[in-house]
Amino acid sequence: MNLVIQGGALPTFLLERIVAATGATAVEPCPPQVVRLRDARRTPEFAALTPLIEAEKLDWAFIEPGRKLTDFGLICFDMDSTLITIECIDELADFAGKKAEVSAVTEAAMRGEIDYRESLCRRLALLAGLDARVLARVYGERLLFSEGARELLAATQATGLRTAILSGGFTYFTERLRIELGLDFATSNELEISGGKLTGRVIGDIVDAAAKAHHLSRLRDELGLRQDQVIAVGDGANDLPMLAKSGLAVAYRAKPATRAEADVAINFGGLDSLLNLFA
Picture 1: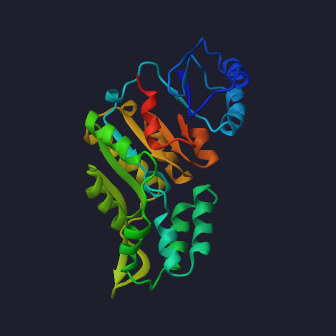
Picture 2: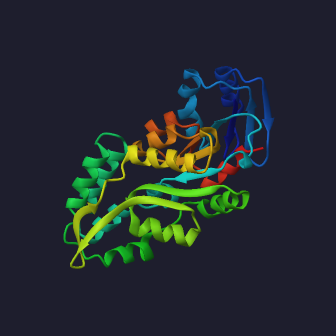
């Protein structure tokens, strides 16, 4: 594998320790602010160095040598705190005066401390009775794209990759993003609305971690792709099964448990820094 470090100057002392920890055979500077270590192995010793790498505000990735963006056929994104900067359910809760309470449950779920289904039901129950017109306000006033999201999507779409949102969030947002960004697919939960108010429930089956992984596999098979031709991008414990079904698992500003299982950790750069990994 190649180990790619990017985002700034890599101190000599840290580079030497990374080379020793990974057994890398060559170091190749790839300006701007990218270093590629050839024949590197991901070892426990490297994992022990990641706090030092992150202290320097550097991102890292393990990727097979010579991989090109054109080797892939599908890229799947989580939505909340990945493709966009916000957690939509937390912003909805703000309008209900319950943001702190809902955000605490969201954070616990992202860390994997609460089952996602349980956490979603608990949070939605707190939103029962909220005016559905608030959905439009969240989309129009608070939803922002993550740094580099549009650039990464433009590059992948220009290369011919199919694009998808696989989210435990809500169709009100994913469908609008799918149309605005020209994405090919979107899967998420549909909020139940009655009398112009949120009921605190969803319609149909909950899209949880297992469902996200299922939909990635379904899209892969429908497109006639292999696992190594799929990129998945996420940030929380709910994304781990989806990341495990991909050929390149990207943790974007993610929780530690998610970074530990990913091939790529982007903690400081934008989503478009993923493009620096490819030959």
